[in-house]
Image (cartoon, one colour):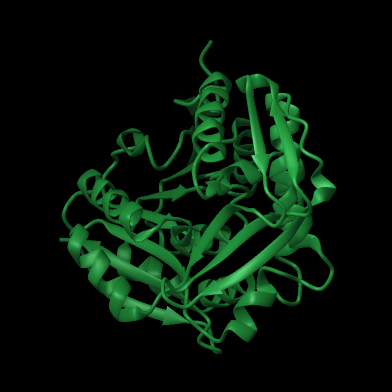
Length: 323
């Protein structure tokens, strides 16, 4: 049956199959890794919302500050008729863009894209009440693998906010940006939120807060594996670690085994051994410089037109056009 609110290109069975494949590959690799997207079950999403309100976690506040200051300018410059948001979640900050584009008189439709059908359905219902004259339809899809399903209504602005681009390594960013450019017509727009390189004394606490919320968020991925793959991780036996890697200019989040661990993953028929102190990498969060990001966008076929930062210069919004 067709969903009245959503276009569904990613089923729960697809997500489960991806988790099995990623968990098997990551837990048998050296060093061991897991993709950060598996943080975000219902509990993980709640914890992340809590993280965004922590005093140490500046990115959400900094990006909101830029959008508050610049949304009207972005609306005027782009004249977008369709706004597409990749990894939309609740689209909370995006309302600043929606309101500005509505007030500019150009916007006709909004297409939030996310892997979570339930989160999208809630967001769509709320947005339709807040913007009754706007056509809002959610897209349940993975923005890495399903860019071909983006609505092609012309005069589009694609927003990728929150610094999520930092979860890609450089080798992953290049094909993603190129694939996105291939989906856009000449003159269409891309708005990218990017966290900036700064002192580790600011960066590290943002990923290792005093209250321990990020530590709980990080360990939540083990709860996800226990629940969905019948694993038996002793979650309390893994310590949260956040490190600044100056060579790659990214933060790494890891889980460090406290004592030797043997974990059975029933859903994969897999046994995994962790040595005392062995680490499982759960996230990289790359930080950017203007010159480097400009070059990456250019290589993909985008020209940077505007670069705005918050008043403390911690976070940037880059507005680029497809050329």
